[in-house]
Amino acid sequence: MYSEQTKSTKPIRSSIIKKLTSLAFNTGLIRVGRQLWSKSLTVLNYHRIDDPNQEGFDSFLPNVSAHPDEFNRQMDYLLRWFNVISLRDLINWLDGRHSLPPYAVLITFDDGYVDNYINAYPILKRYKFPAVIYLTSGHIDTDIPFYWDLAAYCFFHTKADHVLFPNGTERFWKNSGELGKISKSWVEAMKTLPETQKQDWVSRLPRQLDVSIPYHYFRKIMMNWDQVREMSGNGIEFGGHTINHPILSRISLDQAKVEIEGSKAVIERELEQRILSFAYPNGKQADLNANLENLVTQAGYRAAFTLLNGPTSLQEARRNPYAIRRIFIGNNHTLPQFATLVNPINRFRP
Image (cartoon, rainbow, N blue to C red; front, side, top):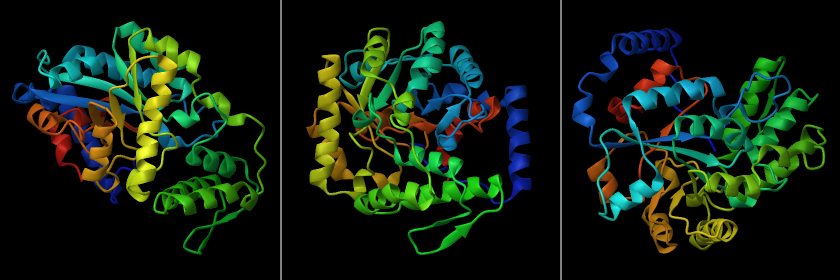
């Protein structure tokens, strides 16, 4: 799932920053001194590649990382200024078998949405770029929705005008704009709950909003194993992202062990090959710790990825390959903003 990004509370300041970013991009200032960070690892994190403005789009909007056209522009930028590597390249470097090229970048996706196959995969093939997709194995080839997509569906289709939050407050809306903000806040509120409470609240939401979900409705938004196998045979690697996508720091270590090891076992069985890397759900500082890193190591993974702001220095990645930084890409990011995100100054964002 996406990780909520810090937003400026002052629109004027945000506008100024956007203009300065565009100026730096258009004049080339954004790349001044880039030779100083040639020995770094830039890891990009995408979720969905789709058009959220299409009629009837009733999934969770913040999980759309880019429109296919924008994704294509971003890949073109990487082609011009970076060297795209595979996960296998990274593992070989970690194992001391060869070096990484300057300006190394790794492209990753989380969850396993079918638009990765339909929209992103053809663009990656066009550029001959490898990538890694981190699968939430319990959702692949099933009708089991992620809770944020179930919530988005319910809020999109409801005729109600209010919803109850876990803290006991009721929030009302008068128009689609207010509804969108409240639905996003409701999903964020779920992330603060213990896993069992979260599942209970989510299971009651369709009834609370008086929405009926069609049979097998959510199967159409996730990849199936045949698609995964096809991609695996054509330059796309896969990794573990748990079975059910819990925030691992909010469940017991025994449960976390099952989630971490279980996703690896399922993917290895389906692909008949060893899975080498893992991505932490949500991936922020509070969502991982040394105990979880140890579980990932013990499960046989060789590297693991967070959603802490990147890029990562090579020394940092080698020192702890189980907490490598990734850069979250959102559908609101213009190409100048994308160029700023892949710059080391991104490390200093809050």
